[in-house]
Structure formats: C-alpha cells, structure tokens
Amino acid sequence: MTALPAAYLEKAAQSLREARAVAEIGYYQAAGRAAYLAAFHAAQALILARTDKVAKTHSGVRSEFSRLVKDDPAMERGLTAFLARAYRMKVAADYTVGADEEVGKSEATEAIESATRFVEAVERALSGP
Image 1 (tube, one colour):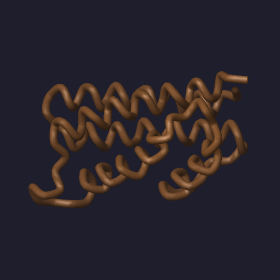
Image 2 (cartoon, helix red, strand yellow):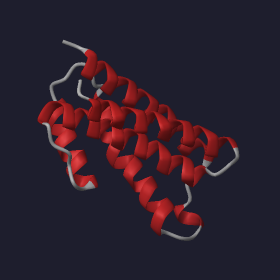
Image 3 (tube, one colour):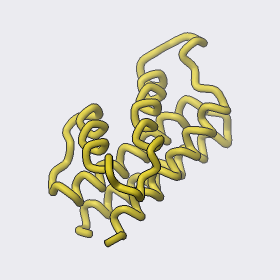
C-alpha cells in the first residue's frame, strides 16, 4: 500500500475518534457527520489503492467504491449502503435546520458502529491477498 491510501486510513481513524468524542458530549449531528467522514476517507483509501485515482465528489466516491467492492467478500453487503445513509446525516448536520432533521443518539451510535466496521473492512480488503 502506498503512503496516500494509508494517509486516508489515518484520516478515517481520526474521524472515528472525533465521532466518538462529540457523541460522548451529546453532539449527535456532529457525530453522524464525523462517522460519515470516517467511511468516506476509508472508501477513498480503497479507491486510490485499487485505481491510483481519487474520486472528486461524494457521489463519485459512493459509486466508485460500490463498483470496486461489489464482489469483494471482505466487505459486508450492508456497509456499502452505509455511505449513502451516512451522507444524509452529513447533509442534515451541514445544511438543514429544525428538529425533524436532527440526528439522535441512537442514530449517531449506530453510525459510529457502522463506520467502525466499514473502516475495519476496508483495512482488511487492503491488507489481503
């Protein structure tokens, strides 16, 4: 693995630490956003490692990642869908207002758990044969 995919994985780990920290103090929207970013950076690591390119948009990351791992047994099937679900949390945290758009504790906790599994699966996929 080259240095750049490893840098994306470190950024993913940093985002997971941030997600846990802000969830601990009750900032669930920020936790959801950070959980998404952890998965986003891990996906970028895999894309870069396998294609030597970086996707330029969030939707590009989701579609390219999905294409690259569709037959990869290291990736749980539901984890690829997590990118799309978590992106909606990022959008809610960044752009929407009102109680209807808030990310709650259970949603943030689930996002952190899913992001953790996502990052771990990418690490396995990149370290495998």
